[in-house]
Image 1: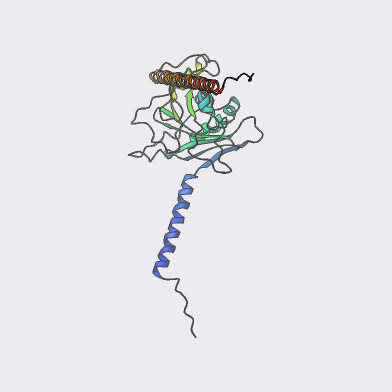
Image 2 (image 1 turned 60 degrees about the horizontal axis):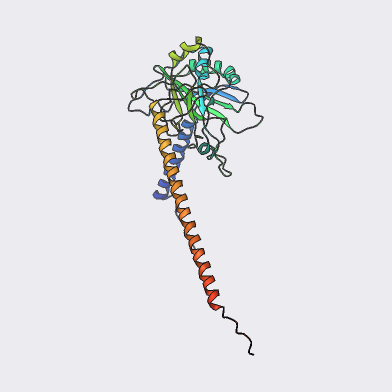
Length: 322
């Protein structure tokens, strides 16, 4: 008896295998493009390097960055030292209280990374950007890191912040992967006297989907401010960053209040919301008062009915027969 085996080398089966191989190759190449980068500095768990800039080819026409760029260590320290960030840990804190901005980089971090970043700008190409990944300062062990990227295009230094160690990410319930959509409510600010640049739409980079926390500086203007008197720590310029950041539009600085139109509109909106809430609470209190009064009236009526019933049920005692 001759056994007949199934033919696994049919054209349809071969086509399926080919499609699977092509899909695997595409996924592998996509992953390699996403993770592409060259680390130029790796000390004390801090990495500085260059990587492909995804904003170069996202617009209607390809654009180039002004790289290689000749920035001194002091230039980098001045530019990055003006950056502030606000955010919150988890999800409830940002609802209950107003987050305050903190420096993106501490003085110790700036002292350590300014020179490597300046060297990275000198080695970066027109389609590349400089990336950074720093551990949490003053912490023996922490999974939180400060990560982002920098690139020069035209007059502007564009800053992208993808994570910051000062804020704790949302609990993933045992998951190990960071949710790319979790930006921790971060918002970038600029410490006075520097201000955030308003980039024309034609020059605005076409940001990647999950890079929503970004800010632009006029590099020459900020560097020219280095000789001005230092501002008190924590002071933040009143110029709001671009509206594409993921946090709320207005914040109070340490010494002054932002009186920009956006801030005024938000304050008016908050006043209207508070007024509406107060009116709603007043209506609820009035309704509760009316319900309490109705219950008291019903209780009083029931008490009167009960007393009337008791009085009717009482019969006068007859005197004993003589």
